[in-house]
Image (cartoon, rainbow, N blue to C red; front, side):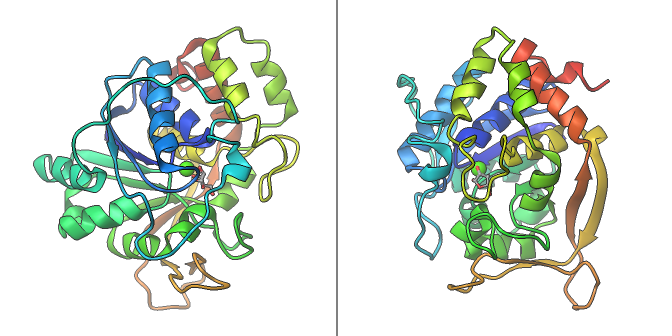
Length: 316
Ligand code: RIB
Ligand code: CA
């Protein structure tokens, strides 16, 4: 697996994930598709283009996708990521045009043209993937791997007590994708346990005199303000943890397969992820849940990327 489409609602942690996916030799980001989520859609589009330019990957095509969830209304998370989504700093416009085509159509086209060769790194609400599946019913058999940052496996949510943001924004899409695809899931609980970056981490980044270190510090500035649901004294890095686990199998310590379903009803349990760890339902056990990751090596990968643009140097 190395050809990857990154589907993202580009804000702070998405941007670090996009840097990692672009700078590792383990993955080849052949396209980026944008989905409604963290902040205003057009800002998400520009954030992706700016981030790709920082990774010397400005030629990676950015396709605009769904500007709203399939069914539900939602609110952005600008309170978490800062105005504009990258910590509050509005970087200069890149002037890069979006690629011609609709994101979901592009996902379907690329997977149809190269069966079994293209993987999806999904680090936003799953609207685009659900729409791609509606266009191409065979997509689950055509795609290689599908990695999803989403859900909260038997733990508190981060946008409501019941739900994690990506599943809450578009629970109808999340429900369909987890029912129809073989997904590898990186949830909010794992992010809290194994992706934390505390003050000691930021102290080390502050010693790096690099553009990526400066970007990391500014992009995460708002998240460090102890946003609701985030870990105090530092940040969690759900999207870059997902990208790292996809790129580096060495970081995957415990992975279990369960029946996972998402509550698409409106109201109190909207977006809740039911994870049947005790096999008490008759649901198909098809979702691979990463339950433990090598958090120290993950942090070293991010530090190596920020220090010398070479995340692979840490993993033999
Ligand atoms: O709940 C965390 C997820 O929601 C991350 O992908 C973050 O970027 C937001 O999209
Ligand atoms: Ca995201």
